[in-house]
Length: 173
Image (tube, rainbow, N blue to C red):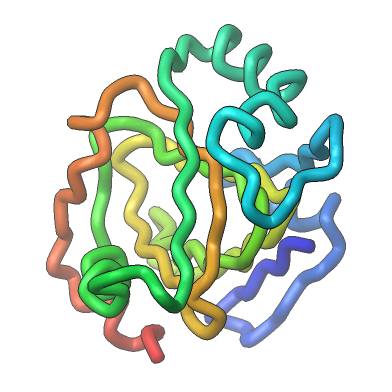
């Protein structure tokens, strides 16, 4: 279940409709998706994509996204700390960043246009779409495990463009 943390007031919101309303007001989409079948822990990419095709295909067709794949990051992933550090710095992308959390956990941090900072902890079943050019960073801490479907237009759109604002340093463990 998603959690929204508002850094300015040190408030945590766990009510999904309130989280959705807050994020939608900032043009961030969050939804809940369910598989049409139970997945094994070692399910391969094709099985995972097929289990969510009833959600995935209409979304991709509606918004024109041609590509979806599955990532699986675990504590045993080679170069895990280097991967983590790459995404812990505030950045933007020239394409939307869209993730559906099949399993595990990750935290999206957002630096809003009004300079507030918020964090959304996503877990299995959470779908998140971050608009292009939105200032954010992502953390795998503390579990270092996430299995997610990534949806995109092209891989070049995912190149991080670092802001070098330093805002992220105040919030990273």
